[in-house]
Length: 186
Image (cartoon, rainbow, N blue to C red; front, top):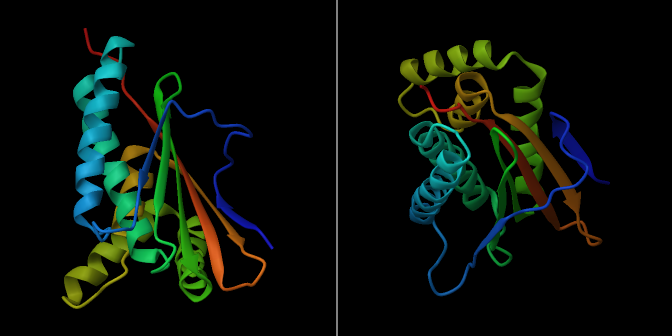
């Protein structure tokens, strides 16, 4: 059964850019998150600047958003079904992204638990709690600080959809994000 969490998302999404990070000889890993983020941040900052948006703000926000979401996709993907697909576009003063990856059912269930807590609480309060918990315990992991920062500091709207396969062993995870962008200052 398909489950969805978070903010409503558009009923249709027509991407202007599609990137597939193949899990092949390159052994898809964390390093690919920052390279992909830098590329998309620069690409869309240039497009945004031509459309009257603050290019520097766009580059920074888009790069941070893409880096966080690709890192999560790499972390939560299934070993043998590991491609990560990013579909992106500028929609008025917003950058939108749909990121798709395949996770093992157990991993997807763990990720859903994290998301359930995030969407059921105030992101600002939860962010402060997680920062304090991390400061108190150096070995703390899985804090969700990146997602919470995106929601709280950047105003990103997020939606996650989990669709299990027929066998119940793999889950297609689709993350939708909308990042509001600032207009150029005069």
